[in-house]
Length: 236
Image (cartoon, rainbow, N blue to C red; front, side, top):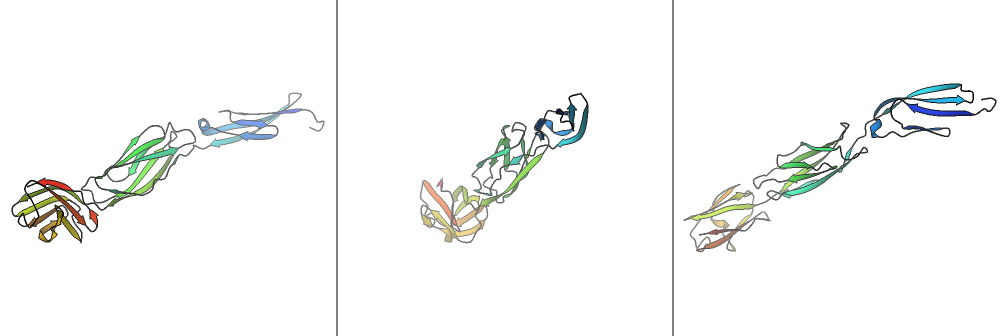
């Protein structure tokens, strides 16, 4: 304006109200509700009502959620573990949904509906293999994020049953495969009487005296390659 006449500036869009003029600067501050394409224009009007406009397009992208990384987990079979999962999203946590993309069948997820979820890792005592787990979170716009971690099953030795039928002591359980084994019956190592051993069963042969058995209650435990089993009580 060569005569320094007053000129007013206005800004508007066909959707939303996220474009503002601050003196001679244009500020664009879209929110999650403004996702999509909007046509906007800036109009200059002088004191005589004459105006001129410049149009432009604003494309607001959908926000992307984020999920807190989960470290690798080492657990023992038969010992469940619970993990809390958290996610965030610029549009808020209410629309977030969790799911398991892949993982072992002994992993289950409960979505708490508030940007958090609970993961239960519960391998049975017969489980010998872990695996990779991938957790996915999706926001209300369909945008996704994921995180993965590995489950490592620590070696465990579990006794589930023991019976003596002369002359055999039969022990059932899991994790009986290994190199160096000690079988303690009432505190005495009787591994030298093993006649058969597989991953889920051990058979020892001998008299009650040789196997350190007594009438009534007896206790047995196994130490295999340094891993100590549970103590199991049985009657003879």
